[in-house]
Length: 599
Image (cartoon, rainbow, N blue to C red; front, side, top):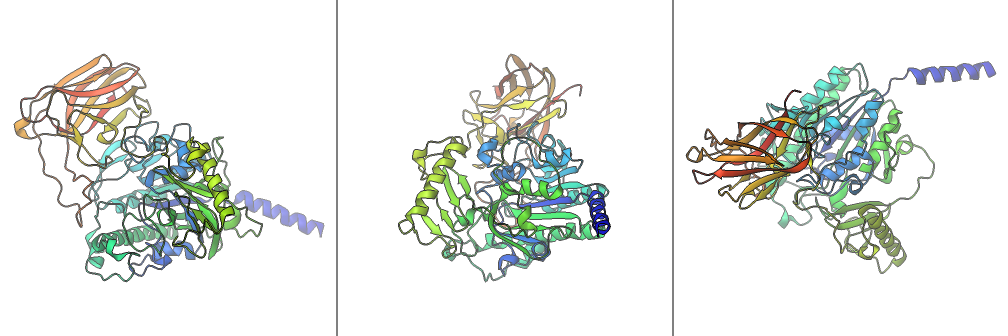
């Protein structure tokens, strides 16, 4: 008997040693609500490929993300609440993940995995915030919060500009599939953060045809607030995402990678419009259930039983510790995590799971969710089992629970947000959270690893009468530059002294060409003329229906080779000013690009 047991143990050890580490694919959609899957009962659309991840694997029933985009991405990447990571907003540099944070990609890369990200990054554009600096060997996409061009879009590949061909979600999928094929013989981490169904409202024609005249059976709780054509185009974008997920799943089958690949699907926040959410209260931007509950589906045939359901509350902060545990690799970094390793739940462990509270914050509001209750940002308490729509405040009926959660929120505010306990009911403002003020952290240029640095309009500060092309800074440009008193400034740290080539992406009517402009940084100066004129029309082929008024219509910007400026190793405003204006305006500016010479 002892010999048999010994033989079995040896065989088990050999099997474990020979087992290949699992590949990992993480899909993240943008502004897709919990209700935007047929899996969750929405008969307005069909998402069989996404649904299959749950049928063939596990479903996290009560999974929570953040009210908006970049915070959720930061929490997924780090396993930590986003205010701890430096992410305070969604644009103007506030979306940057602190450089001392370690990411899930850092961990997988250290373990020998090939790492790639394909899509919307939204946690920093310049080195050392760029995805190539955060553990991803390969990156193809855009680093901004939202994008204004969904067809043949301008993108980047490892920091170099490229022009995509086709629809944006299809492009990201194709680049991800190329990465998977190239790394089929070694373990890989493939992160696919889509930017749809975020506005602008643009879907491929074949998908729009399915919905443009469709009667929608599932409507918002208050139908009077629902804009039906917006719902229709969102659903069209969701079905396109499902098709793209299906392409990847079929590729895994063809490459015989299905069984040992962990596939994850989740969303970054609640729905971006008023539409069907299964009766939940709230949408994107809010800390109620509808603003922060997301589907989360995981498939790993070799490690997770089909049809597994996790009923305990979980969140985006749990994915990093869970995926590293499932892959059997060590996390990188010593900072304490807020997330839990969910692998025991996914593998059907019967042990008692500890009670926990998950906190959600945005715009000064904080809510707290337990397995049974939610305390909202006003201090109202709801029984989420009997009242999932948050219709009846029971704080007076259950004062002990209300008191416990109020104290927990106060303690969380103090620890995570650095606020006093006196503002426990959401009356204060999170320091530095939200808004369009430019983040005070400087933009670094001149890294040897990343000699080309883009300074987009969203990260700059307009002076005088200069303004952005829209209230949403992410995909915008500067315009209304008409006076010598006007300026455009970026807070720039030259990481290394040297000569930097300067390019300005601009447009300018022919009649206004010839303005003399100056670029300055500390004691350095560079002057040149805006010529030739370049005045292209706004794109008219991008939108299925009109985009929200807060978002810019885009156009093709031309490169002005401005010259070479020497930057000393210092932090100072990099400022554009006009010295002579022969016409009525100087130019519109989308970005300035600095490239250190000699790299």
